[in-house]
Amino acid sequence: MKVSFVTVCYRTPGLIRQLLKGVEAAQIPFPFEFFLVDNAAGDGTGDMVRERFPWVTVIDAPGNVGFGAGNNIAFRRAAGEYVMLLNPDLTVFAGELEKLVAFGDANPSYGLIGPRLLHPDRTLQRTFHRFPHALIPLARRTSIGRTPWGRRAVEQYLMLDADPSLVQDVDGLFGAAILIRRKALDDIGHFDERFFMYFEDTDLCRRAWSSGWKVCYAPVAEFVHYHQRESEVKRFWQVFLNPLARAHIKSGFLYFLKYRGEKHPRTC
Image (tube, rainbow, N blue to C red; front, side):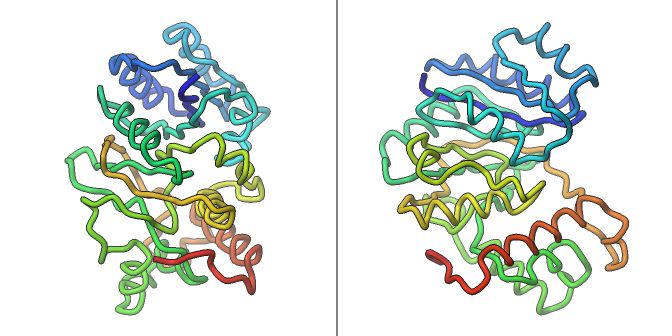
């Protein structure tokens, strides 16, 4: 088995249908398996996929277990040489997955590889970053990010000084689309399930570097990502009303507590 694709969903049947239609139309030439972990089992998504896309293995999670724990359920069953994370809100095009896997085959020192992601209008998304400092979650999700200091901090974090057309080593990747080498995953371990959502991808990349595996942004392949920042809030007090913003800040607190006093394994 060359690649095990893993998608975790929660009440997104329309996006899942679009994603799987794209995978089907891409006519992937290498042996693969596809796991869909349904964090809202019973909402009809799983039944639709079983009927319309019988080549997909649907796994009903015991509840909304979060992003990391949902992926881990599939990781334990995955048999591929690579595991490829695919968010439900991605569109896959013919030939792109092959390019990413070929790049992985040619560069065995890379444990995690992220492709180029584009908005639907074909503008670039910044999907790679430096390791964050403790105020980055607030700077990204509240009005603090609109202050001069906040803008500089976020620009530094998102590597706006880096050329996104170039292959490059990076501290971390956002988890919407990552090709993970199975040997690296065995060394690193699975997602830390203390992170319900957010920072689990940063944590995994950090553990990759600590284990001797490189993390790479590789714009050799591209996908469209219908990304909406549902955790962003306009005013500071709205943090307390937005569950995703609260989850982001809580995960940030857990991340910095986990690595308190430790130096970054590398920084770019």
